[in-house]
Length: 440
Ligand code: ASP
Ligand code: MG
Image 1 (cartoon, protein in one colour):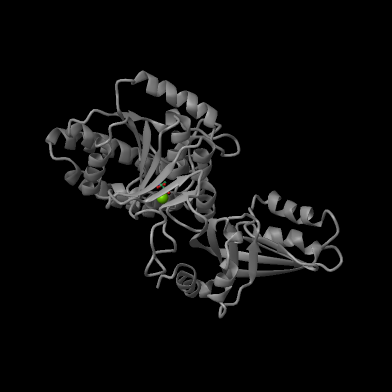
Image 2 (cartoon, helix red, strand yellow):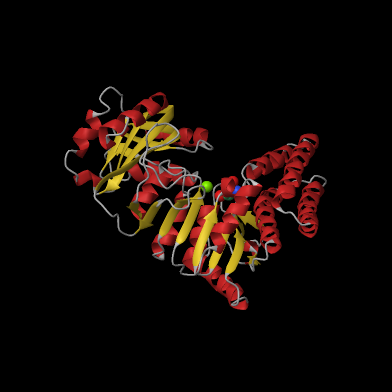
């Protein structure tokens, strides 16, 4: 059995939905299809939730009506037969009625999650109506019946496994299953989600839970590229990489894969393949335990980084000092990305400024604290990169004109990270493309 996950742009237009129906029915092995919401929908739902939270019901109502109109025209092109269109319209009516009811009741955090869940519920149900119209046998597996997270928002893989296999057991005769990405139930049994971009995570968890032969992530680009295609003109897909390399790239900025989606596949040894819906014959990128080759694979950039430097000649090297600093970040549930230390100072970076004020206040007693916003982490990733001959020379040789604020080398054998001011991002990615990959 395999998992095929399609992102928002792969289902965002009626003809794309037709196209992916063609892709999933070509398979010989049983498939679980995981779908995102149509592109733009989750953003619209976030906006609706924000309006309601602020008590601005008029704006919320406008946004709901606009989104509904989008779905009305979408289904007109999705299905042809009158009977299918009636069913599709009934689905739309059901979900938008729900949104309109929410408008009238008092807002809560739990309700906002209900709002966000409508996108994936709609995309999967509409896709199933199209499959039905085409006479393609299939089964809708409601993610809310098997996907769950605990009190710490961590997926409960054990329970997911049990519930999903029970569901599959009940429909042994079927070969094509469709389910929602992103949505789940939390420890209180309420509707919740795996955070933005979480459909990849759903796919990987499902693949792990059923010991899938492969977890395919279908997007609109032919795999993980060696550099950011939005910034650099000439980039090439990487054919194979290890889970460790993929994790570094996903975490440090490659938008193609949600960073959390690596661990379930890695832990349960499920190969992941990144594929392009618009170019299904392209090889894409295969992610497995093995890296396939040694040396530099790709660079990625992570924006909106805040650098914090704590200077203290008196305390820095005293034992327990770093622990005290880390405890501050732990208290505010703020992950640290990069860290370097010197005799008199420690520099670190975070990307979440939600509690920055409080964090800075608590760091004050430890020394002088400097904060620099608007930085970018550039990560150079590759299997055993640190031991690759001439690598460091090539890396720094190609960016000599760019001021580097921090360097992190040796934390993992697969990554060298640089912190630069955001204004140099385009320039550094272009220069690295030439210097490290010989691409211009
Ligand atoms: N629809 C959700 C989002 O836009 C989940 C996903 O697409 O992965 O974040
Ligand atoms: Mg995505």
